[in-house]
Length: 260
Image (cartoon, rainbow, N blue to C red; front, side, top):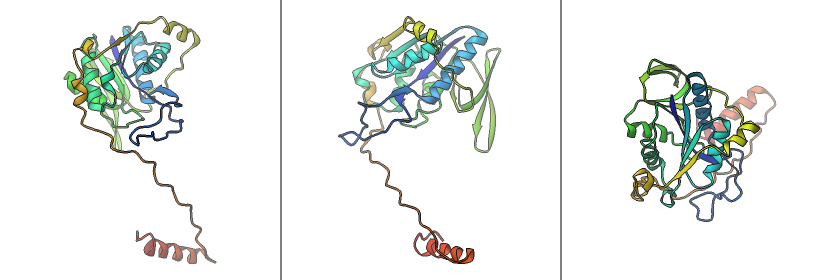
């Protein structure tokens, strides 16, 4: 089973995010960078499938030199090799342009199954995984919490509003991960040492048959960033009895908040 995992490096969710001087990006100098949490589920599920059925797990990512750290972490978890698409032209691209780059890279790699996080916790657009599947013209199933492989098919349990939906597709296919699918393992010390020797190839856009024009296909541009407005402090409703407090609350909701 040839399994590909689409991986993104993102700021740690516990980092303090500050807006950059340009007003359109964040300050990155002091940030801690990690594997996108939903992509960790993807790596873990790929490893479990390989352990059950044999094969190889390849990590594919688009990013800068720093993204090597995230790929090496996935290799330390147990993945077999990595591919990084790193090119000056990719700076500032949106999710759809990223999907085009990933799809072009994937076409050069044998695969039976592709796994991706359902979203990245930085831009949060839920787009890349499904767009890659569309560009590759293969089935995709999103927000998967359980999967079963059998006889060239995959059966996925996915979350929908108010319940669970079971979807079956023929391989090759792509699915995106949701919380509850698994619990990602930690990289062991032997795994970290082995990861240093595992293959990790860096490619440019030209290497995957594209050029800088792919960046020009970006349709989403960040115009400005601003912090959320400060929340006002709470207000204590005065009154001698519960009835008086309820009446005062209703008055405030009607006259001041104007929600009644």
